[in-house]
Image (cartoon, rainbow, N blue to C red; front, side, top):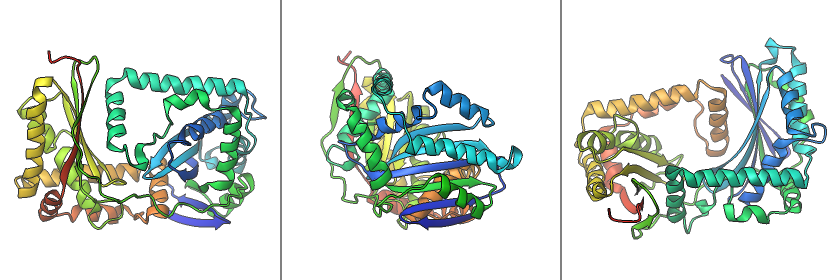
Length: 416
């Protein structure tokens, strides 16, 4: 595997040359500030761009054309990287070496060019995309786990840029006119940082020449320099909300203060895995298996914010005991009350995850992206060695400096 980075104007191009796969991936990412006032417009613009183009005037026409290119597919999604909002468009295609050579890549990139530079914006498509997005939020409300996560984030990030949701705000959907979609599209092309990532068994020079020709970006903004708002999260009062539920959803927030790129980043990853990630973690064993307090429990590390979040579901009369057990598990990490075998299992779990990431085009593309933006290593052995080097003393030290800052529950409307 070899990474080559090129810059044309303010656009960055990354090429990961690897013979691992019989497929190829081309990802185009647009970076803008994360702002609650713009994410809905950006996500709707992304959806409309993917729907059709001037030369592919219906969704079905576009789909059939892609299918004719050896089942090439095109996906699009919005996501957050810390305080940055990203719109990403991704082409997935068979390696042209196994098909009709460079012609396949040329035709696939031509579709991407049409989509980005010659969209077919109209009121009918906007109404459809608004309906699809509104349906997504209605489904989120119907899925109580997803809805609980949303309400938890609303409270946790109430005074933080991350309060904005990647797909927008449901109450804003109907108020977005077509003129704002067109304006947002122009801003994406001119005022966003842009990074193009290509993964596959490629000739870098020839591929770069073709990508430049088909995607002639002239953006006026460089890639973001900062993704973190490292001001500490302050402790706040517990919040409980109610609705018609059979189970209580419990969330507890652990502040570690450790972000991507920090010296203790991999140690924090290991600590979170040992603490609550997977069926061999302390939380799962103690809260779920030994005490039978919860239907499920897990911990997720959020390195852009220096937090770990514990999510669980249980009966209402188990909540207080479960909180105490979670706090007790953190104390066990602080005092070293865990076995060496537990630590090794956590490391092995992470190593398997790292190997899986390095074994997929999407994973390599994401790693190359983090290498450019966050100076993260793009070396599997180096990453694994860093995980393996974490000591019990590191876990104890990080646990000692971490603290619970916020608890949220979404529960039933009565005490019964």
